[in-house]
Image (tube, rainbow, N blue to C red; front, side, top):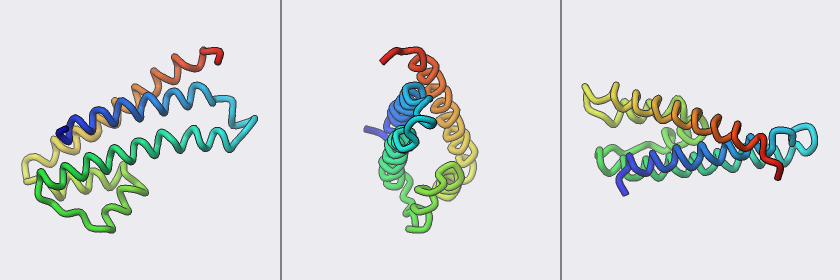
Length: 125
């Protein structure tokens, strides 16, 4: 599977999981805070897993080796450090498109999560 395909699957899967968790456990914060924490942490963990799977293949494709510090940054604050990785790993002229693709994936993830959340909030499970 090519890195863009991994990224697309990751965006859809983690966005759907985040939306389902938000919709089903919206009231859990007042009743059981631990349940809400698990519901938020699970989809985030899936998303980070897809990010690192994509980074693994992308690193080979662009012959760029990530430092351990960059990996830690991506793990802790992906919204800042994934664009840093993209800028460092791409040749001049391709950097902007790579970062723009990341922003588009982020917007898609938020949209999918919101649509899924709205559709699951009204389910009586």
